Image 1 (tube, one colour):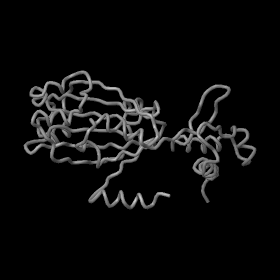
Image 2 (cartoon, rainbow, N blue to C red):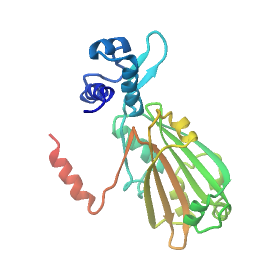
Image 3 (cartoon, rainbow, N blue to C red):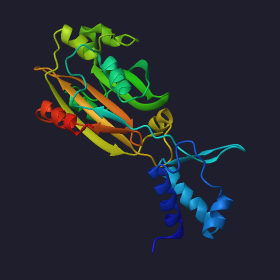
Image 4 (cartoon, rainbow, N blue to C red):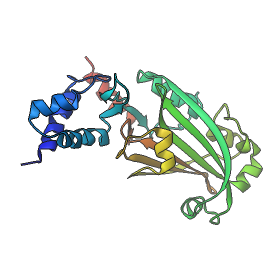
Length: 260
C-alpha cells in the first residue's frame, strides 16, 4: 500500500485534474484535511508538497492565502512551422500562434556578447571561447514567462551582418534578414532535452520547486556553414513541443474531419 500522504495527494490531484477544483480555488486547510483523513499535520504537508512539486498548487501567503490551485496554461509550440518562409517574422509568427490558441503573448529582448561554450562552438564549427552575439527573447503568455530563447551568432558573421549586433529586435526577423544578405538557411538540426533548470532559468520562468524544463536546440545551416544556434528553454509545466513530419495537408484534412 502506498504511504498515506501519497493517497491523500492522489485524491487532491484527481479533484484538480477533473476540474472539481479550478484555478484559483483553495485547498481545504491543513486542519480540515487532518480531520478528514485522521492523520498528522506532517502527513498533510507531505501530501501538499507533492502537489507543489508537480506544479498543481502553490502556497499563497497571508490570511486569505493557503494552498491554491495554479492556473495551467499549456501552449503548443509547432516546431515544424517555426521559421518557415511566410509573410510573418519569427516574433510575429509566434505572436499569431499564441493568439490562435486563445492566449495573450508578450516579449522582451536583450543583446549580449559572450564567449561560446565548447558544445555550442562545436555546433557552429568555431573555436571554443570565441566571441558570439547572443540575442535573447523572453516570451510570456498571459503575462507569465513561458520560454527563454538565446540565439548565438559567431562574431565573423556579425561583422558581415552588423544588424545582428543591434540592441533592438530586427523587425523582419533574423532568419529573413540573414537570407536578404545571402545567408539562406536550408537545413536545421533539432534536439530536445528534458532537464532540471539552472538558477537563472528557474528565476526568469518562476518555476515551482521540482519543475523541469524542455531545452530545444536548433542549429541553422546555409549550404556553406552553420550560422546560428538557438537554445530555447521552455517551462515544462506549461508547454509542449509538436512536430509534423511528411505531408502536413493530410494531417490537416484528418483533423478537420474530427471537428464537430
